[in-house]
Length: 408
Image (cartoon, rainbow, N blue to C red):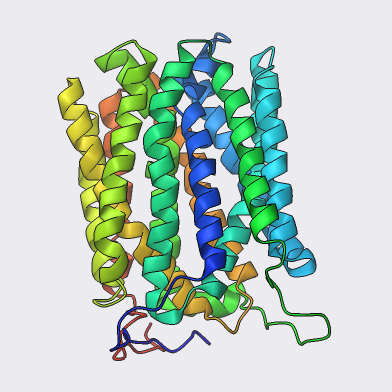
């Protein structure tokens, strides 16, 4: 059964554990590196003579391998523990990213980026499982906000630097990203080497929360929908189509695409700062619904932007909406799983829903661009985000003491 909902503590927030701060630091380093390649990846794909659809498939391939390997990643965590799987995942992505820099044709680029998705799902699910289990109950949204903020602050610098590095050569950002991933792995290996990240030998294992059990909870079902939409719009279409749109409509220099992604990250960080603590006091649902609406409207209007100023403003607003959504949504998952359950299967399934959006979104949007327009692609993406808010209107509130765990 889902964990009983709890209210905010009367005596103020708890302290964030040291282990989480280590993960936060690693997330920042990873985000800087990921931001380096985001602005140049679609352009790098098109350098092999392919169109918008094929360049979007490169982004989707990464998410596809994440999707396929997610169940196995959850089983690896249960068998080996979070830390070894986290470190192995980072190394796999580092090696595949370094190989991407030396891709000689589109097929090799597609293969190397796809293989990186295996490592990505390993360290992503490991990190989420740790956040769920280590975060004090009363500050779950705050912990999620701190983790996501670190990732996004790295995302602020990453795209700008990546756009500049792209001027030195489209392969350079991939080599730099590989180095930053190895640095993140070193941070976790050194500072979490003595941490007890799983029950000691001989102690009973935590019972697993199956997907079937979690699916009975209306909040978990609603999170599936919002996770899919978030993956479609903010992880898929924004990374795959926005750089092409910025280059084709706004300006031809790589820094233009980097700027659009960077200001989205700035808005995202502002939304996280606003919602992190408040979602631990006022509840999760208002921030999820509001974030989906703001993000959906701003995304739908992005395709109408005719200048850099308009694109920047819409990117900031969309980022704020996504930032308001994410800590509350992550806290809902933690509320559903609880600290006394192994959330691997349920968390991996949610990750699969989000990755499904990341796969389908860029492919559909790329087709809409090739056979329609950027306006149509962003409009459809915004509409899907808005539709995802509807299940939350009936989903239970997992945080307040008045929530009904058995709500439909």
